[in-house]
Image (cartoon, rainbow, N blue to C red; front, side, top):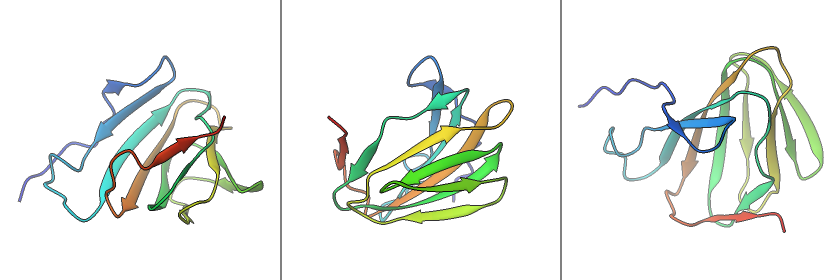
Length: 114
């Protein structure tokens, strides 16, 4: 069984980086990623089939799920059901690092808000 260092190194934007864990861990039934968000927020989006688990590792997040706001601190977790519009915002001081686990591991499952 492989061990993967979960440190976001791939830049997705100026503010957001990711470490994609699924391939390195040979996961076939779920998708797992660790993100670091420097400031601001991710795009509001939904997943047509996937439900997601968000776990804050460092920092403070505001997670808006279908217009209900949830403030998450270190080691707080939140489940987001499939077909729920959601967005993660860094509301703390310093970077926000969080783990996202999704199942099933569908490719191209996200829909961005128009």
